[in-house]
Image 1 (cartoon, rainbow, N blue to C red):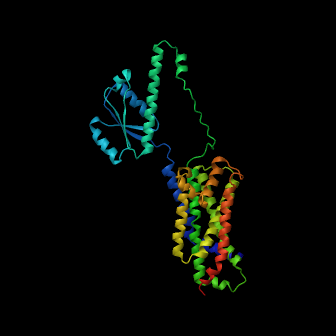
Image 2 (cartoon, rainbow, N blue to C red):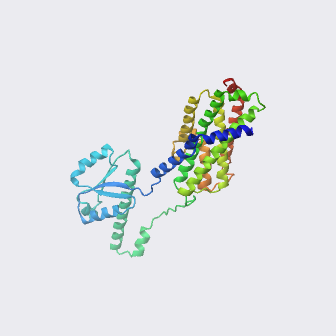
Amino acid sequence: MGTVLKKELKIFLKRKGNFIWLFAMPIFFIVVMNLMFSNTDSKVTVQLIDRDQSTFSRAFIKQLDGIKEIDVKLVSSSSFDNQVNQLKKGNISSLVVIPKGFEKQFGTSASQVQLYRDGNVNQAAAAVDAVLNGLSDQYREQKIKASLLSKGQTESEVAGTMKAPITITTINETSSKINGITQIVPGYMIMFSFFIIMTMVTRFTTERDSGMVSRLQGTSISSWQYLLGMWLPNVFMVMFQCLVLLLFGHFVYGLVFGNFLLVLFIVISLSICGASIGIAVSMLIRSDQASKGITQLFTLGGSMLGGLWFPFDMLPSYVQAFGKMTPQYWAQHGLQEVMVHGAKISDIWPTFAVLLSIGFVGLIIAKLSYSTFLRRAVN
């Protein structure tokens, strides 16, 4: 077995294409996805038409523009039809109109602000809606306070009246250093670790079609020795790949590991799982080309269902049901539990159970299918 293992390690290291899939591609995806989704300083642009042109309307606009998440862009009243048309086309997400009489209405009745929104852009339009309602509540409180003071109440009495009957206290129980990179780095690390399947199928197909497998039958190497000798180098390579990507995330983006020993155990379990699926597929598949389709289906499909691309809680419930059947979900779940919530081994033992069970089943399938693999070998 040691001879086969050394041979495979040498061949693996000579194939430069393996390093592209193991390291270059996942690092590229991690960098690009982090640039796309980790920009926390992005603002929602609000197109605004001020038809009142009063001191009060300008003060309202200044207060709205002072909100960190909002960028007010003033447009002329004459462009109203064009702005509505742009909204219908989806080029803008919202349009705020301050009508004439805005200042006069404030003293006598409710001042109106019109919000035109694109119903398909829920996040941006809802943010503007929430901000406007928040400003409305502030002005309402100011009006009530002024009314109470005019009726003779003291400042302390007014403060007591205006005090909210219910106070909401938000308590964060996760690590203070956790950010979106905790989703991106483990997610793409896990996704690319399963590309080892395609690498393994290529190696077994080459061995089978070159006559190497048939010649090995005349030696003292048993089927288990051969299979494990081909399997172990790929386990090591996936482990090395995962550790490099995790360290890249840590030193470049400040990824928090939590209990690194538990993270390492999950990486080992993931490596065993991925390499075992690879060796099982290698025994069952007939051609190298077919393996590419199977690998992409398993890797990309499992990544989508398992919550590697987006937080698992954001997926529909029926997708989550299928996602929990994938090893990708269990690997990602275990890593995030350790990194985000400081989980202990007693909290994530199902992750080890699922990944190692899949690994064991993969090896058994490979052993049982070895005779079929031999019959397809070239003499």
